[in-house]
Amino acid sequence: MKIESVKKIIKEILIMLVVLGVVSSIISYVRKPDIGDHTLSTLVARDIDGKELDIANYGGKPILINFWATWCPVCKLELSNIERVSQKYQVVTVAVNSGTDIEIREFMKEHQADFRVINDSSGDISSKFNIEAFPTMLIYNSKGELSFSEVGYTTTGGLLARMLWVADK
Image (cartoon, rainbow, N blue to C red):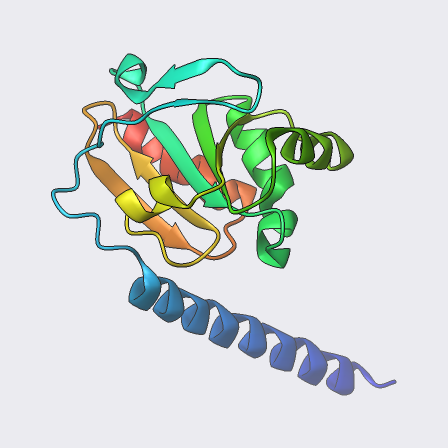
């Protein structure tokens, strides 16, 4: 294969990636939830390990709230990204319509993920946040103000950059 052919293929791939990124951003913007007042709502629930979680106790630090589902293919791809972010920042995830606590724990073990999960088996929590698509991420700054919302796949680097950005706010 000639060098010109390789350059042409690389150029086409780069153009495709840029177009894919733009389309993905547009879809994310259109599908983002209408949170309302953009301040962190109260959320008190038990996680899949039976520990009570009160979102009010996370005050003073940024937090990522990730709504996902075990049946969602994109969510599965993103699990390792959420895992990496959870090792450095506060992360709470909400598994929506994903089975019992035991089934979610098995899923987490199978996918080598160890972040905090609330089981939203009824969909009530996701409804409270107006979440309609999965995965959806909400990133709140240390004042409890919504800084970012993202629908769809987000890279580890993208999540870490957003968390770093809100950590300084």
